[in-house]
Amino acid sequence: MAKKYNQDFKDMLIELHAAGKRTGELSKDYEVPIATLGKWFTEHKQATTKDLSSADVAKMRADYLQMKQENEILKKALGIFAKQNK
Image 1 (tube, rainbow, N blue to C red):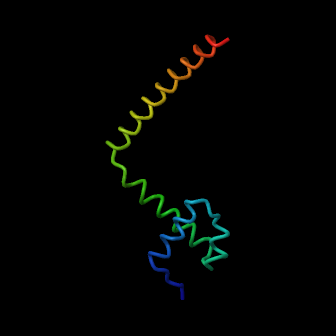
Image 2: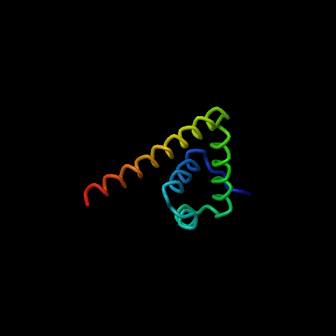
């Protein structure tokens, strides 16, 4: 019979994995099969990505493009200031 794990336990392992703990280490330390952990991580990732609406994605894309443009401006300004200091 398959072992049952409560949601708090699953959430704790998902957080540890997100913080950088390796799947193999989690499996060994908490005695959970690697395949089970992989399933939990995949389900969590799918659940969190489905929560984004198309408006959220569009806003993030617009913010990204604005930051990219600002970054290019700062790079050009840095080049100008570097030339002035020579």
